[in-house]
Length: 208
Image 1 (tube, rainbow, N blue to C red):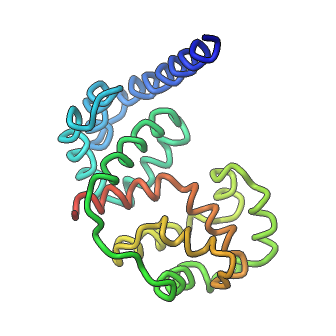
Image 2: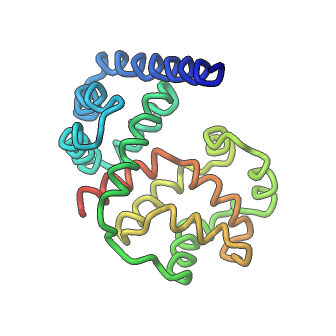
């Protein structure tokens, strides 16, 4: 009984935070904020069929301007994290329903992509890897270690080649991976970069 009550309270707190973000979006201009506002009431504790059309419409808006959308969702995650988390869960639901656009990439292709995007930069050193492994909060990690200048290029390559960033994470996390001096540290940053993954899945959904 106590656990159920505690869970209900946590759910209420989460709901309040999502609603606070939703109310904040009323003050925002632009197509992205406009496409999110009607989606939230429909998607709260509802089956995907109840909001699929509105979600797909929103993802089309995201895919229309992916890099502008990346900046929007960076801010959304920072200012209203509960709202972003709710939207992320909706995107994952739709992602799991859609057919895969491409078979899983072979390790050599994933290694080449990672090296092209990150392997020739001076900041990518063993020292960076040792420090990054100690950072739990990916947001502070990206600020501290100058990841943003390279993440847009990485997103562009993932979209061009239809490579899910999660596939790169799996490759970099392999115990025998020697693609980069700090492969596992880079995997941490990419795995926690939900705005980037949000944009990728929006574009992949539109293309599927």
